[in-house]
Structure formats: C-alpha cells, structure tokens
Length: 447
Image 1 (tube, rainbow, N blue to C red):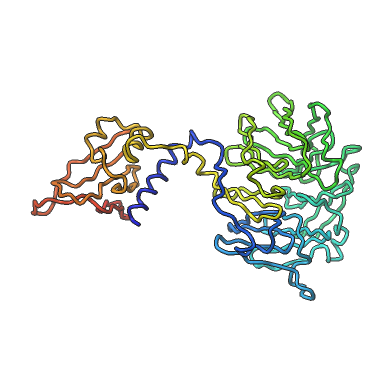
Image 2 (tube, rainbow, N blue to C red):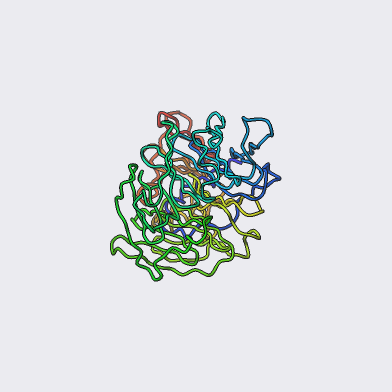
C-alpha cells in the first residue's frame, strides 16, 4: 500500500504542472447515488452545498442531506409540525445565514436551520401567509447585501422579505419602475440583484435603486422564457465581466467592453431544463434538451455529455461543489458525480516510465541529469518523495540493493541535485536504498 500511495502522491504533484493543458472537464461518472444508497427518491429537483460542506438534495419524496458516506432523510410526517410541510420539493435556496429555504409543489415554503435542523413553516405564519402559492417554481429566490430575500412571483412582481426584521412587502413591476417589462429571471451579484426582464437586463441595489439597465441588442430582442411562468432565465456573471443568459433556443452572452450581446443558437427543446453552473475559471456547464454543454472562457460551445449517455429524461439540477466535483440530479436516475479536476489524466501516456517521463517532459530536467540518477530505467513502484518547507522535492529509490551512499536526491528549479552525504557514525558498511522518506515538523529529513 505504501508503494501505491507514494506513486499516487507524485501524480498529485504533477497535476499542478499540468493545469495549463487541462481539457474541458472529465465527463466520466465517478459515482452514482440513488435509492440504493439512501436517496429517498430518484427525481432530484435541486442540489445545494451548505457552509459546512453537506450536500442537500430535493426530491419528490422528501429532502436528503449527504455527508460523503450516507444520506439523512427529512420527510413530512402527518400531525408532526416539526417535520417538512410536504414531500414534493421543487426548489432550494441557501441564504448567507445557513438557512435553507424549501419550496414545495403545493406552494408552501419552509425554512430549515441547517445547523440545528429546526424547521420554520414560513407560509403557515400569518405574517408571511400571502407568499403561499405565489412564487415561481424554479429558482425564485436571491439575496441582496442587506440580507433581504427577493422572491420572484408567478404573476409578475416581487416579494422582498427579511425574517430577522420580520419584514415582507410586495412590489409590482410598476412599483419597481418596470412598466411593461416583466421580470422572468433573477440572480444575485456582488450583493446586488440582477433582474432578467423581457427586454433588458437590470441591476438593482438592496434599496431597489436601478444601478444599470442594459437593453437587449440581439435579434428578436425579447426573452422567450417569459411566455411560461414556470420557466426561468437568470443571469450568470463571469470573472471576465461577461454575462450569460440561457433562453429557450439560444445562449445569450453580454460583452460589456463592446456593449453588445452574442447570440448562440441552440436546438429546439421539448424538455425544459435550465440549469447552469460555472467553474473557478469562468467555464460554464449547462443543460439543454438531454445534453450537457460546455462553454469555454473564449465562448467556444461543445457538447460535454451527449443525449445518448444521459438519464432518460435528462438532468433537472446541477451543482459544482467547492472541491471541483460536478453533481447532476436527474429525472428518475438519482445523482451522478463527475470530478472536473481529473480531465487530463486519460490523455497522458508513458514513453519510457513514469519517473523519467515526469522529470523530462513536465519538470524539464536535463536528460543527462536523469541518466546519471537512480531514475534511469528504475521501476516506477520504487519511487518515494516528500516536499520540504523550502519547496524542494526529496526523492529516493526503494530498491534493496546495497549502496555506498543513500539513494536520495532532490528536485528544484528544473534540476536533480544529489547532496554530498557524510555519516556521523563510524560504520562504513554498505547501505540499502531508502524505502520510506518523511519530514519532521522541525524540518529534518528522515529516511
């Protein structure tokens, strides 16, 4: 086991050197979670990661929390007011105070404290009762920098709520200054609220002041999703300043430098799945029909996972967790996980062997130094390594052949360097190579 662990560790070290050549994320399923693993039901309408790292999955038979090993399931129990209001969940939203807002198909809304797991039946409270059955089904909530929750209504207008201040008010489109400009999608950006309307993209602050308004410049300058109250076209903000909106049959990309929209047509869809996630570099993954598409930072569009490989009715939800794993919730096939960090591994092949290829091709060590070291034609499983506090990578050969000096060197700045070892003891007997290598807290190298 020690042999494999050290070899894998060097792989991890190499990953940092290969990041520049990584291709779009690995689309091979690394794990599937379904009812056999404890998921309450196989239709997964929403996925969210909380502040402690737990993954919450909404289904049509309750709520599930995944801790990396098992699911904890929350359901409605008739007569028990401490349980969920219903079991058919359509949407989830996590606010900045770790409260999970749960929207049900019945129109009820619950708020769960993810730390205590105590549930507040929001729409059963007389003060908030008017919200009941008045919210859009998909992604109806966003939060501004003041902690106000904006709720998009299914018949125009927005509720703004702050449960800490016990505040709730309904604002019509007219009251928001959006006469004949229906809001059809909403998201949060830098503490402000981005409203996607029929005819423009509008940014408001926490006091409902319009900070900017960007009229559409693409052909047929009208968001088509507004034709259906349950559809949603929210804005995704990229690191380079671009804004991406997924409409029914096209992808819209606003480029602020030229103040114009790019329009990328998509195939007609019979199955509406509007789910978008963005990785740390600004690449975007989104669903359309039964495909998952990949949009690179230079706006090249490709099919990342094709229709033939997907669950029968496609994906209903997506989440990119903080570790770089893409979670997809399907319509009837549970949850699929894909590790986007491992995209380049299948493309690497050895010319000679693992150690020599790594140091020659990726660490750019001169070939003469490799040939004069113990790496020359060594067996890969004998390699050991540890990185010290100065950044040097110490390496040894785990061969048991007797040697006059230890088979230990270090890598630094594209060179393999073998120190001139001397012994403090009096024995001059031959030594075998080092089978294990480690570093103490004090910085001493142990073999």
